[in-house]
Length: 149
Image 1: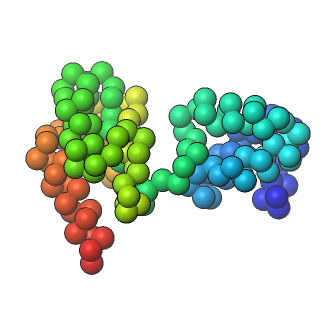
Image 2: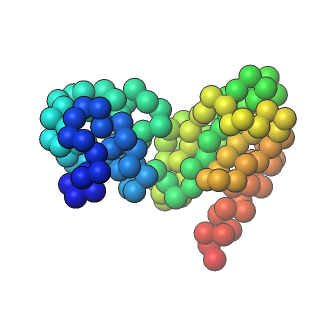
């Protein structure tokens, strides 16, 4: 638990500790949650409660590329549901799922803050806007081509 030393060993440190762990590993493993519980003297059930309450935390290993489909008002009105469905079809997974090859994780988010580009998606740090079903196919094909290199 060496990286925990910067945090007080109290329940007030739970969220920053979980954030630090997720930043490092991409998700929160059961071992990580137990370590936070022991370090902060907080019941494991409370740690799980925090980790499952906040959407920023993941309990499963994410794919190499995180696909976040905006569900904000502008995106919703302009076709976010259809865009999400197309990603599900093309990736063969449900929302919050990860492809079998570990390449993509698909998530829904409340708002990406780029309403003028609706409907919009972020893949990792790249924003794609004014999406259509065909654009979804093209975007995924470009990521798959990159991976094949």
